[in-house]
Image (cartoon, rainbow, N blue to C red):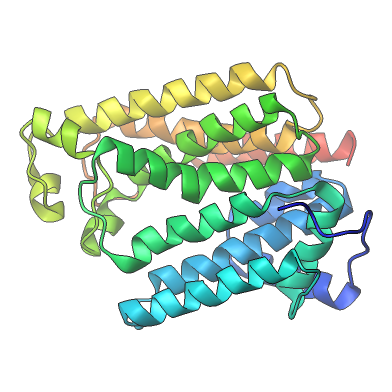
Amino acid sequence: MNAPAGINAAYSGADVTAVTALTRAAGTSFYRGMTILPRPRRIAMYGIYAFCRAVDDIADNEGLTTMERHAGLTVWRHRIEALWQGKADDPITRILLASIRNYDLQYADFISVIDGMAMDAMETIVAPDEATLDLYCDRVASAVGRLSVRVFGEASKDGVTVATHLGRALQLTNILRDLGEDAARGRLYLPRELLEAEHVPLTPDAALAAGRLPRVLSMIADRAERKFDAAEAAMRHCDPRAMRPARLMAASYRPLLSVMRARGFANPLRRPSLPIWRKMILAAKLVAQADRGA
């Protein structure tokens, strides 16, 4: 679908306050990370984040039945369709409508995000095959990246390539980082082919206890590293200013792979985090980049 008519659409102050509060309340580094962007682009990113959070909350709500989660995501499909008719009904969709007009955001990417959430909502993902895992990563991560790079100011094919590789790199890192938490919910996002090749059981609890699991995790980390490298290579062909947020995302996630490697992928129930000194360096870079040109 083509973007709804309009250019340089304005953001309502009340709507900006609402999506900013939603993003800040999430307690993630995303809110602070986006401060390096000029205000209109920052607001658009808060709108995208609020949308992603809303559909993720539906998909992850264990208090809802499968049919209720399906119904909730269907409502969001209709709301996204309505945006392409110029209709919005709350702060999130009004911010999205203006952002679609300002940055030519693509309908297919919003729907891909919802499709990815539906994969989690409709069944418990346990040891998917490689093709299914890659599709999941594309929908829940790379599609968000494709929306994001347009807001950052890079709508080129190279920008799409950055989104494709960086999204997968980030999601694979998430899978490794959250292995224990996912297993506690009956989920296992490691590919069936690798597990079977290393004779690791295909059920979450048994997989976590398997002696050869670290070999599988190391291979996934290698895969994530290659995706980070591919994203970095594509960034060299993009506007450096537009790529600043993407570089910061990579810089905040990639070191987690080293942390997990250093401990031999042991203790999967313990979520890895960066040491405080590394976080301080990243924070300093964030401030320096913001000072140089938001």
